[in-house]
Structures are given as structure tokens and as C-alpha cells.
Image 1 (cartoon, rainbow, N blue to C red):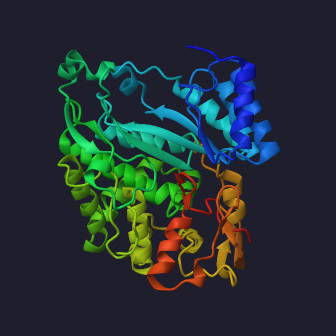
Image 2: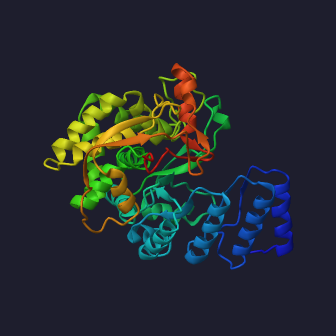
Length: 448
């Protein structure tokens, strides 16, 4: 490692702010690896307070110095640099990480870091790698269940396992040991990708699509499972239902989402088309017929960007919202019979989704028979280890929704109601993405 003089770093931080830089990428491999990195964070925060810039920052946090990383995250969130802390977990199962000699901090320590961040009200985005040699479809599903058990619900970024030219995983002996097969794909960068880009404009990489522990078909199923977990859970289509079932009835997160994705989504043609489209997209990507995780919303021909698989599925559900929820409600009530609050919760969850039909100048209200706001405020960031009491019964209560803005800093206006038709949908999609990270707002429900 090479260290620049601290005064030079401070001066550069001031210069970047004075020049009105919108966003900075801190290229240190792991910010927080050295004690002085906390001082560097102070330089950046001080410069932003003075000039109002940079508006945002992206960095990789040190994995093996969690206390320092938490302190830096706290400073950056307070300064408005970031709206979440990125945790490079890669996978929660030690046997998967050990198979490829990835040595992260232990799961128990990861959970401690997550709890410390949650105690300071700092949202967490987990970064995962799909297709690590040694992984399986079963372990991949368990990984998401683990994260939810840790109390991490905000976002899971999923990256394909790409082979870099000089990395140990690209060596012949490693490839032979794990019987690796790859495909050259145009890979996502987690940013909006214009549909006008030609194939030559897209970033390509060699992606692992099969090893001796998972097949090509497994790899596609792993991608689909991750996409739909993000659609349903991190985009808050079913998150509160999953939390209630876990906390009040001990139903594991994995069980809930495995049923939702593997049973409900394949039960009827209306839902099955979503699964089929994602499967075909993955097949097209490895055949270089499309960019990986870059899907087209055919119903909105004027929309000029690709969507990730999870956001595409979310938009598709919202385009046929009432029909989808009718099928989902029937499935859940059949799957979990005898749970009296569940029907009310399904209605509550449905009404939390901010659709293009929402007019922020008018707001909306809806009735509930249980105090879901108080219930989820009390359990929303707790680990799902113990069964707890259900919500209070409050027949005929009203939830009043008056939100005019969303986003982690309440900076994104809900102003699409001024537009009509396709233009309204396109503006709504744009409002569902925070500056450089996918998100759907509000994540904790309307205030009422």
C-alpha cells in the first residue's frame, strides 16, 4: 500500500468540493483499513459542509476493521454522502467462502456489524456474488434467508462471478478443480444503461455459469431466485408480510420466499410469464443476444433505458397490479390459513406500494383493523429469532398518506401526477431509483 501525505489528501478533498464535484469514487481498496482513514472521512465531510459538494460518494468498506468502518459510515450518512452502508458479504455460508479461499469476517461478526449499523439507523446494502464455485442452489437460497434473519432487509446487490485475467480463480488449476464453464456476457454496472448503446458500448466480462457444484440450469434458477427476492422483499411488495409471519408465527424467511417464487409464481400463466421472461433473458445473455441483467419493458416503448431483472419484474407487477394482488392474496390465505390478521396485512401491504396513480397533492387514506405501523416500527430491524406478540387490534383505524417526496434523504419528489399515460409511468420509474442505487420508496411505509 502507498500512502499520500495527509495534507495533500485534505487539500484534494477541499478542491473536489470547491469545484462542485457531484460524486466521488474513493479508490482505496478498503476504506477503513488504516486508522487515518477516519481522518480522511472527516476531511471529506468538512469540505462538503463548507461547499455543499460532493453530493455523493461510493467506496468499499474494510471488512476486517468493522468498528472503523461503522464510524466512517456514521460520518458519511450524517454528512449526506451516502444513503446506506455497503457490506461486501459475498455469501453468508462459510463453506462456500472457504471453497474459494475467501476469508471474510465471521458470520457472527457480520451480524454484530449489521446490528451496530441498525442501532444507528444506517440502512445496509449487502453485496453478494452469484456463482461462487462451491455454491449450490440450496445454499444460495439459504444465503438470503440468513441475511433476513440478521435483520438486513433494505437491499441486496447481486453480482455475477466474473473471472479477472490475473486473479487466482482464472488459473488453469482452479478452473480444472471446479470444472468451471464460462460465458462472455455484457454485464451490468448497476447503473441505468441506455437502450441506444450498441454491443460495442457495453462492458463485457467472462462470467462463471457452471461448476461441479451447480449446473447451467441451477445458475439460471439462482439468478431468477435472487431477482425475485429483490423484487418482492427489497422493493417492499411482500416484506412486511414476511416479517409478520416470521416474528408472529415462526415461519422462516426462506420458506416464505421459496413458496412465493417456486410455487406461486409458477402456478398460473399471468405469474409464470415473469419467471419465463427472466429465464429466457439469462439464456440470451450467456448467448450474447442481450446484456446480462438488462431487460426491456415492452409496454413502454418510449422508455430509453434497460431495467435490471428485479426492477423489470417490479414494473411488470405494477402494470397489472390489481390482478396480481388478487392472485397473491388468494395464494397466501390458502397457504397460511387461520391467521386472522393476515388478510388485513395483505391489504395494508398492497396500499403501501406507491403507484403512478398516486397524487401527492391529494394523498390517500385506507382502513386497517390492526396497528401495523406500530407493530413494524417495533420489530422491523430486529433479528427474526423469536416469536413475538401480534399487532394490536384497532378496528376501523385509518392510515393517512400525505407523502410528497421519497428517498433516503426525502429528496425525490412524487410529481408524476402532472403527466399522463406512458410519460407518467416513465417518470415514476425514474423516481424509483435513488441517485446511483436502485431503491423503491418509501421503505418503511407512509406516515399516518
